[in-house]
Amino acid sequence: MKKMFLAFAALLECCFLFCSEWSIEEQTYNFSIDDSSSEYYFYYVVSTPEKYSNVKNGTSIYAWQSENMYRNLFAQPNKDKILEYLDTDNFDVYNIDGYDCIFLPFSFLKETISISEQQLQYVWDEFEKNYIAFSDMKKKGFSKKKFFAVKTYGDLVDLFNQYIDDAHFNFTISDITYKLPTAYDEGSIPSIDEDNTYYEAATSNAYYVRFTNCTSDAYLESMPTVGERALNKEYLILDARTNYGGNNYPVFETVNYLADKKYKGTIYVLQDNWSFSSGELWSVIGHKSVKLNKKLAGTHSGGMQKYGNVRYYENEELGISMRFGSKSFVKTLPKNYLGEGKGFEPEIWATTQNMKSILESFGIDLTGIEFQ
Picture (cartoon, rainbow, N blue to C red):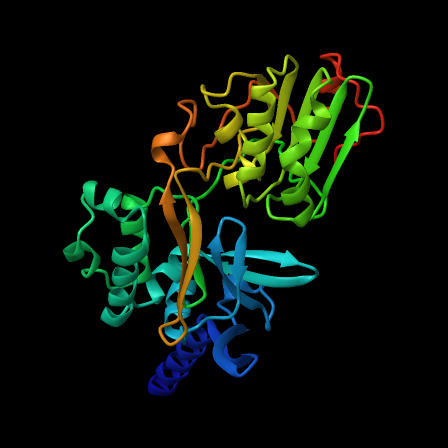
């Protein structure tokens, strides 16, 4: 009888252990673009330990890619690693659109992607041949020995964090992207104006130009002559909120014209946290060599100024793509540039929501102009 009881107890213990473990299902997903196809892996919960009975079967498993991006397709099989993370309770559960989702930390992705010597060699070669910031990185201590000691994506991130000071820099491997964070001010939201927005408007005392990039045909054709139309106005407003950049030279043309004509009015440059690169107009207008009255209004700009003329590099076989600059602007930046990912600090703090009322408080006529 005692042996039967022990056997029954052992059976109960086994059942308890079985029910206390995570069980997840791994499935594959084939993603095709044109003639190329890639296989990915995704996971969902089959059963949970008793203390997670509130997590429903079928719950999808995600991992953070950055502060505001996540994914549930993985370039490599990770079932054992996911189970390991679930056992450590290192996850969060969110309900999104009525569905439970488990979110693993970003460190999960960093640790599960291995980096081969062939991949490292490709990156090193492109850096050495084409990356304008490469010499600056080496001056800070970046070396081939340190680079080829990298084994995982996490190692690479740690190395980049130490030596990359370039907010234009964008590196993707196994569909995971590394880039520096850009400026963000509490309460700031991007403009909802469409990407190719460009228009000009005149009021009783102001000339207003709204442009959401520095690449559109309208911008390239019209911006160089804005100075001619604004010359007799008391205010010129250059609105580059949520402008991802492009070509600086049309703005140079306007500034040079106004400087030559000894423009006596005030130029207001508008920016926000999503004004990047050439969209950070203060890099041109705020320079000491520009002898004009000018004011910077908005929030911090995004902070992409040290390197530019960005080019794209890709090796599909190795699963790597990169974007980085081929020209340095370090020596020509205004002294009040706070740094990559910090941008230019405005003299007049305003957001899209209160921009109009603040500018009008300075006596600027903005009749018919809306900020959105």
